[in-house]
Length: 93
Image 1 (tube, rainbow, N blue to C red):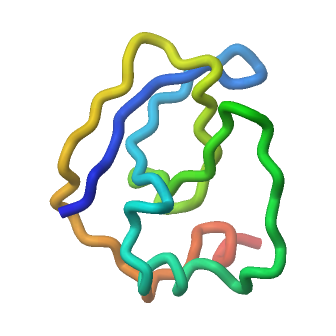
Image 2 (cartoon, one colour; image 1 turned 180 degrees about the vertical axis):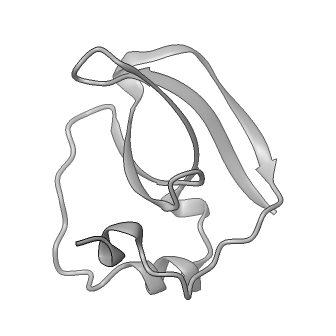
């Protein structure tokens, strides 16, 4: 079981985005290592932005804590994470 969150935030274009996600520190190490190509490239995020694993999109996404709508909910995710599955953008042309 993983600690997961559900939250809604406003995107830059004003649209709302609902997201079910797991924080990187809560992901199993083997899963995280299978999705990260190398640890040398580190992206600096502005304050309030967090890189997370989106459970619905099965990909890394940025969650904007600065524009949260309502409150976030924490829950136990009982699903499986597939480390053998390529990231969605790796399979798209």
